[in-house]
Image (tube, rainbow, N blue to C red; front, side, top):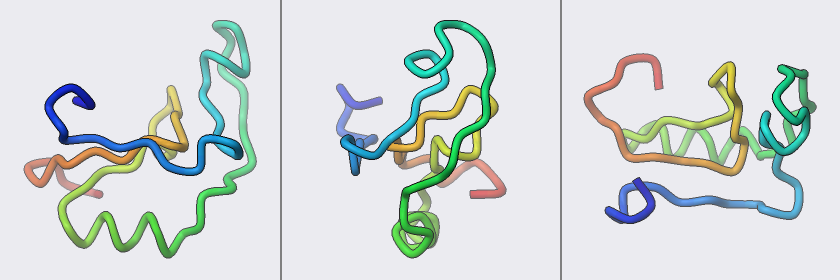
Length: 69
């Protein structure tokens, strides 16, 4: 989605990604993305990768058709 300009990565220095952190094992993370940022993007139709089981806390993606942003 980044190639279509429908996604952006923020706070790279403090982000967590399930694959980078676990080398294939699912592990928990401590969120460091400000909730205010997540809520602002959600109000405009974006989903946040920090909510996924294969989390990517830096990832925000424009997907207005998906519920539960």
